Image (tube, rainbow, N blue to C red):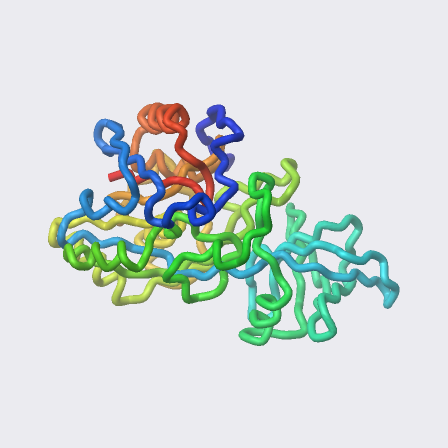
Length: 342
């Protein structure tokens, strides 16, 4: 299925290239546009005022997946002969403890070739993913040992609107604890511990799931990934799902922080499986079973995330709100402003 997503013009100056902290504000002081699901009416506020829009007993679900530095540099060898130096490798998705899908930014890399990242780490190209530029790499380390070396050698993925190589800490949420995302689950970035504590003081419930985000852009528009092709690993604790059922039974709302959380929760509700891999595609035809509202960033034109937002609010209201956000100078992407749809 080809994703149908909204298109609009986004001025370059609205692509946030600096983390809020580098713009002189706290992470929880970014702007927030609040949209009413029923009529699309927007309100304009700041994110640290989020408690004003939630009620005691509501349940906020966050993704505590931790971002890894997924860009590695390697030397490429074929038949023991060095073919290229400084080959960029972008990890895309973990398959097993020692095997990853990866985008190797180097032409003519062949099955059986070896990528040497350091004296301690190398990987063999074992296969090519079908109908994809992604290669399957089997590393010489696995599990925690492999992650530790990746953290030592790697850099965060950044796209063309990020002009400076910011340290990995800028690509983490304050509550990130389970390494595995190759791109930051960015909707949770604006939360501070102070804001979470304020929500809990108001008796708003807080809980966590994991969904490890995959590589969203394959550096060539010929290889556009639909949501069904973008498989991501998720885990929802049993007690979290029980809390969700109790919240909804009490007539309170479940608020998902990010499209990753929506995808995980709705996959579990549809399949009954709390841990696995999801390729669920959500759009305006999808009847949401769990999420009553979403906290998210602003998504670029034609992004499949916009299809998901149309399950919460009509495409007409969403496009009108995005037009207002552009006129008001809201900032886009992982270092940008926030959108609450409730």
